[in-house]
Length: 498
Image 1: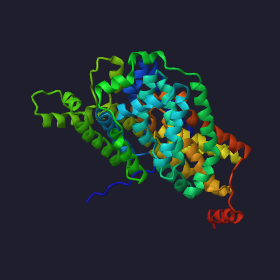
Image 2: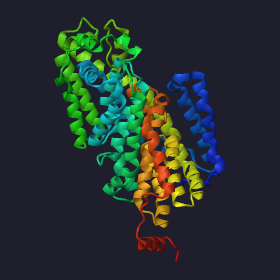
Image 3: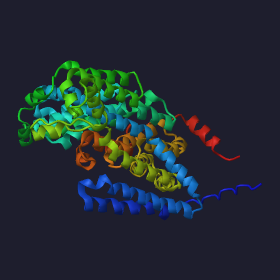
């Protein structure tokens, strides 16, 4: 009876080996942008990520790792992104049915009535911050309010990239500070801290960042008027009223989604329930549009209504108003619109999974840790590591858990309270995730808001300011919490060999 030979122990990679896949990636990604410009995320970036993952896998094989282990890591890495992919598909369905039902047009209609161009950007940031703080989900805010606010900006002729930056800034402030958020719970868990102590400690970096972001958005919108882009929309409110039967009752699906989110119902079923409610509301309140979307005159009316609502779920809203600008605004959504983003996430998670399994991520992080001698440099190293993990592993959860796992003992050894670590993980791990095109959050925001990640990046003011303030406060030693001396002694005893 044959026995399976034991797998060889893989050697630890060198720093040069750890840097090699990054070098490949940093050559291919700019090359993809040069060759394909805005279309680079429609395939070229995916190939770049897979080739870099291949180089990382070759390093692992060179160091004695078995391909089966690498393959299992890839499967596990893609599985981690499964929830994000399902949410993304559900948001695509929600956008399609909420446009068809009139929910998004109603939000745009009311937004045009109350949001003046001169204070539009800070108002968008503040509204998204309050809602995200209430429900604890940046993705839900972007997929519901965010879609409508982008439409309002287009209707007013304002810059959609700045608007997307304001939406993301507000959404991530609320997500970061809400006890209902998964990342807000994950960070103290990874650092060994307590949830509400973590939230209180984040106030010192987060509130000043939001204040500066609001001032920045006020400056960007100072003296703004309806731009030339608004001319193509004509009177957008009237155009929307011609196509849809508008009314506040159409916002009930929005209320249902927010209530479910507040009650901590899981994100995927919450958003998909919202999408199905949108389909029902479309059939009840916009039946002629639903029949028209079905596009099959041979169908009976009940079957045409079913077909139209079904189509909106998987293929989005398609209308012909005679106004090209309005059609470009509304013709979107459906699960199919998210498939390219799903492709990007799968390739990015493949790269991240191989980098982690082969040990290249940990090797890079330990190199950074050796340079962190002071408390300030340790916290800055944590910030840099969390951001770097967002770039390399393409997932904000890994950007919180992996540095948290590696840095936790160092914080304990130096007598630093876990709130310092958990705050740093959020200040860079949570906050920078939507700034990276191939990260799950960056890909999601770009697909949902219809604005490329690199276009909104300069205007995601809160997300840019927060890590900087966190680093400055770390270096000046402001609000650095220490643990009791006896705790440090106990930790050293526990980690000292007999």
